Image (cartoon, rainbow, N blue to C red; front, side, top):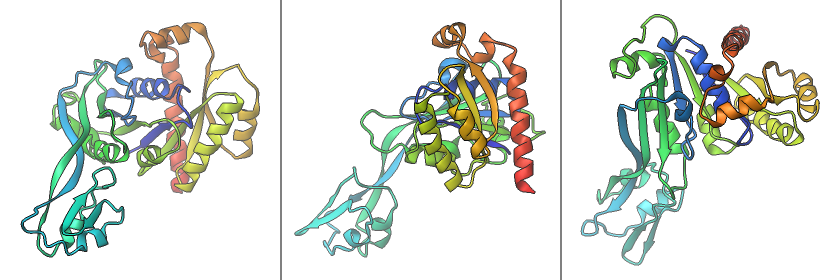
Length: 306
């Protein structure tokens, strides 16, 4: 099952534009798009899904049963994140530091620690009018960590070998076929921080969106370093082609990165995207271009496996 992450080193490069149009250009009966930008998801603006499933998501945070607790300090000793502290005869839990690993509850000799779900956001999923399976996560305002939500979103959405079959069984896509490999497209958050790394984890290919400017080149270099550290093959999409200079092209040639698609800087495209129209609706000819892009990705993956 091809798992393609669409990513960029910064926001505003057209990452979601590329991810949604790629999904709309492929076989909808086996395509699943996961919007992993849980802090500011916006792929739904282009795909208009009917969100039929909803589930709260979060981390298990420890709670101390004071009457049973002897303040032995074992919980604080095993906490790698210093989220549990013992002051005198009191045990305090700092939820902002907790990573939900469960070590404190597991190691408590008095079994005085239980875990409760600290809700961090919601997961939503449903079919789009085009037939693409869609899922997204939305982090609550004020939460500090997006990675746990992304991790659970990928699992919940069926980021596995039977992704679209699971979606069909759950009612996400009544016409999903059991034949053929599911295609999973993950729209990553911007940047190169932990949420992006979590989105890339387990991916087969990274489609890196950039623009031909000095800023675009700088952020592309950072993104390429991340994908190579994770040993994920990558290809480039140059958005707003025709502005800036040729440094991005020269860099891609120097580091042997294929440029798989170019989207020109055109006012009509920008106006359509501002209205919430997918690129392939504004320029239907790009359907064939995205299909060719996907064929190139498949070819690169076949070469990588040899």
